[in-house]
Amino acid sequence: MRRTITAVLGLSAVAWAALAQADVTVMAVRLPAKDVVALAKFYDTALGLKQIDQVGQPPTEIIMRFGATAAAAKAGSSPEFLIEHRDGVTASSQAHAIFRVSDIAATVAAAKGAGAKVQAEVATVQIGGAPIKIATVVDPDGNVLELMELPKGTDHLPHP
Image 1 (cartoon, one colour):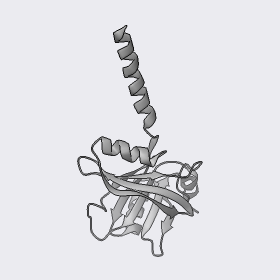
Image 2: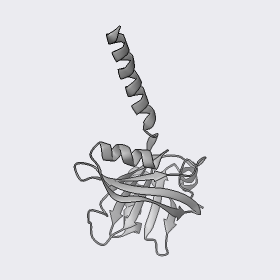
Image 3: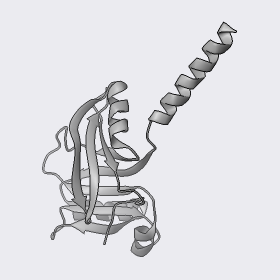
Image 4: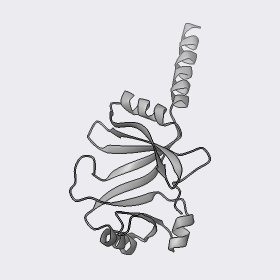
């Protein structure tokens, strides 16, 4: 009887821990570039990524996604590749994955509990007119992970 109770409690704890974690998916990869237009052309030619948006004129960031055409890529849901102008590569500007999370506070707490260090606390920024919660953590090996919680009912960043 004692073993049964212990097993039930153990399974309950595992189930509870699983429920406490937020849903997480890969949303984007940020790539630093000296020349964003040239690097975007490379990814188009080499891998078939299409430009779906840009920031600035001339662009300081080009947002790309997989698709047969730019319209198909814009309508698609593949992870985005954010090619961002950087003069030099530092720890904060290195290429990194961006994860879409359903609960940013829970995800930051889970990452900290697993050994990550918080590089940037949760902040809300406007992207495409939508309030996006963003935090940055560094894994135990020094890799930067950007976490984004989108508004409810939104499955990708808005690109006009």
